[in-house]
Length: 424
Image (tube, rainbow, N blue to C red; front, top):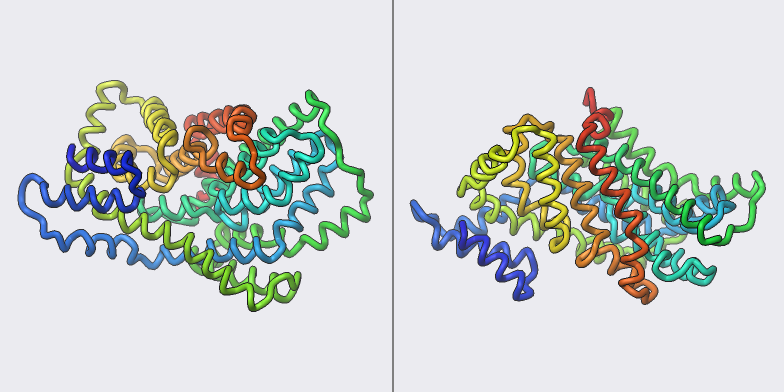
């Protein structure tokens, strides 16, 4: 087991990609495993078994739906309707950035996709109107954090498969935490807007607001369809993902008419690349996770933590501190596939609800997208308009602080994550 983790960390330090590092470390772990020998054929067999699951069809489908909606002009309409309704507040483009990302998160489920889509539309305009490069990037990065928390959510699907729990319940577990995050972000934008005297957008009358909203109604219906379908049990998780793709294609081709047949190859290629990265990571994690389970590391972890405390809330806090530290150096999906096999048995032994635990883990690891030095969303928004990284990192601190406060709140108040899923 020491060889497994030492080789994995060593390969990461040498610059190897996480998926390949897990495969090589797992191969070394198999070759030098104590006890009965394990045939090396177990490595590719385990990798194929790790992704030979019908439920994983949701991942490429939701990614494809998000790509189609983003390419079909949906983002622009969401930005327009957000600006129409809250554009008269001081520093209103900050509010528009958060609200647009909130609505977009109910479509794509990808933080990076949302950050690029809304960032390209808003960051240049925010900078031109005096919002500052750092603040402009921080608002978009913070808003995009909502993408993997509000359903549909790729990390929630991944957690559900690793933990063998309901994807629908995991989706619903993210709704209230996501809305809490968004509400706090809007308050932060209001306070900063007033303190810095940021500009307002021109006022719009009710008739103009109505026209903008009507134009965006097809975009606004997507998250409603997904949530109603999940909560009412009208469709399975995979059926909802397929319907999201069909709906997105119909809206793009026949309602907004912003897509042409010649756009499909590029959309499919982009969705395919994103899906391949996630599925390869899950495949690489399968033998690695098996070796972690074989080493009985979860039993050792339980014993070590029990020596500190047996209070489930304190144990959750300890786990979250660990995951926040992990988020400093690892992106969320690799962190999930590496650490969940050890943490899930610990949570089960302590009687922690797996849906509650999953929501806490996902929110925790998504926070890692915002804080340096790895903070993927910070790098994404900086690349959109050549923003200075340190300026964005400083401005994101209030949003990061609120995110951690929401995390603590859902740790100590589980109904925020499990209430919507009751009865499913």
